[in-house]
Length: 419
Ligand code: GDP
Ligand code: IMO
Ligand code: MG
Image (cartoon, rainbow, N blue to C red; front, side, top):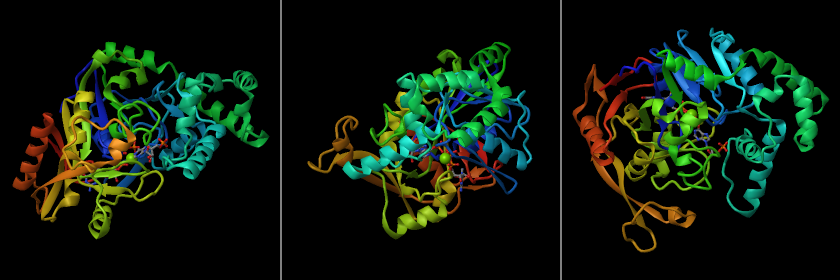
């Protein structure tokens, strides 16, 4: 696929996160001039494999390895300065020195403070007493977005000088929790070190687009975790759908020319919440092992299940997907029959559900209708896709009415083909 000049391409997860967005963004970034994160924070963990070396990004966009492109962290992101500092250090140790000329962190991104992280953990503990916890990553993501909505949380611009930050804290004294002298000193030192990266990224992105740049927007999480369109309340705290991503950077929506939805050939979920496609028992354990389905970020084992076409079709419409990237079919190689969810039944009535689940109880009562298709021995021989796998792809395309554009055949950067 060729990235268009003067336009943006959006890469979105359309399951429960961890679809392989990092890999696709790295592949596309070869052609990009600017790659930006637009929402979420270091709840994300995006993996790239190059020649046997593994690189994981949390806050930095997955364009870091392509020295030809600039990278940005948009106004819609929540930034933990300590995490950004450590990530820059880590990628430097892997041979990628990210200069302030290359990385732009929008002044308007919200800042994660120790207070927010503590609150995240505290709220989860409270929830676990009354009801089920969300199973958050514990990074303070939700409380930081809440703090923004309360208009009390500082933004990156406010930590760019100690005077501004002190004034902000004095106006919102509860945010000082966890910022004892030693931590505060370290925080200010970190902010100072990050100051050269702080910019008006929205204006930079718009200028680049006007100059004909090819821009990539890297979604984090997946549409089933969108705060409005996901399995609420078991979701993350930001909007992830296509319609919100332009706003996470500050470019006009009409500048987005392509919206690529990333899916696995099966599905996974980490954290709590409804997951109609979930599989259990020995087969699930085997699939988890084959796919190495353990959190990139938190190391938690991911629940695994079949591909859910009901949710995918719904979310394809909401997001206006122009193409699908299908990842990890190699993990299913050698399995005789592959399941696909093609309808939702109501457990209580045994009737097919009409419409899409809107309440917690509706989600809890979804019983999946599973169809089985023939499996494949291997995904591709050279550039030729296996016949059974082609039939599987055709079924997805027909059901969701979106063409597949990229087929990933392994974790390595080089393992995949454009259709
Ligand atoms: P992201 O959060 O969407 O970027 O995805 P993660 O990096 O959290 O998880 C995806 C995992 O699948 C990573 O370990 C990738 O290296 C791996 N991966 C991506 N594409 C493929 C593929 O086609 N085949 C296999 N076997 N692994 C893949
Ligand atoms: P990437 O970008 C998978 C999940 C958490 C939890 C819920 C809320 O790597 O795909 P949060 O800390 O955001 O308040 O947690 O969302 N979650 C993810 N699951 N991949 C992610 O990111 C996720 N980011 C958050 O497990 O269920
Ligand atoms: Mg991930």
